[in-house]
Image (cartoon, one colour):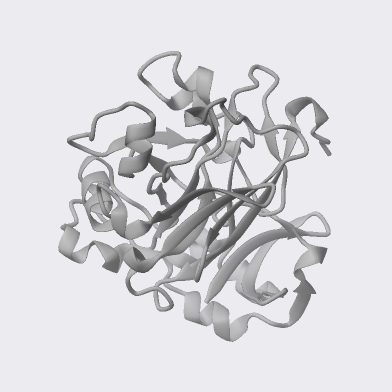
Length: 286
């Protein structure tokens, strides 16, 4: 099933995507589970599937928000595809390179991502994200996929000069709405083996990145094992698994995102996340 979070008539809600339609969870269901994070924590996805459909909307009627709007944590993995390691002039790491993003750094599907006024070095990084389904700590890689609720497209937008201010990536990865997540979470019953997935990033319709999840340096079970060792993973937590080669910073000349561009991250079987680019100063606030 495809889980979505959205805003309709100014109210945050959630439900299931079905092609170009979205079936909203009933009011009674939403009173029991305030958001998708609560649904996942309760293991109530099938209940949601049985419940949703009293209200049905066209996707064009809705404003999508990040699929998990309020995760406890967003853990992102850097330099995890060899072509990207090589193009950035780095060495293959001995351990996963993990940094954090804050929820406010992400926008939803079809919502603008913002080139900040502080920099013009706004870069794209298409990724596959994992959504954790069950609380876990010290999980072994052999059992790690049992703790996954589903998978989602992720755009880990990077402000490269700020990322390079120090060895810590945090400032360059957390500008407001510089990244995106969506359009949906596809549950694991539809994707029993994520290693078969492929990822493509488009900018204005042109292929810029392409990679196979099977080519990750640290595969998904290893990432879950590693992250669950230093932190308790909770339902709704997000792990972004890394980006393939082809980022704008590694091109000659560099390709930076400009206002009016559109970035799309596609993972067949998971979805196609669309993000138009605006200048931060152009953002319309309610």
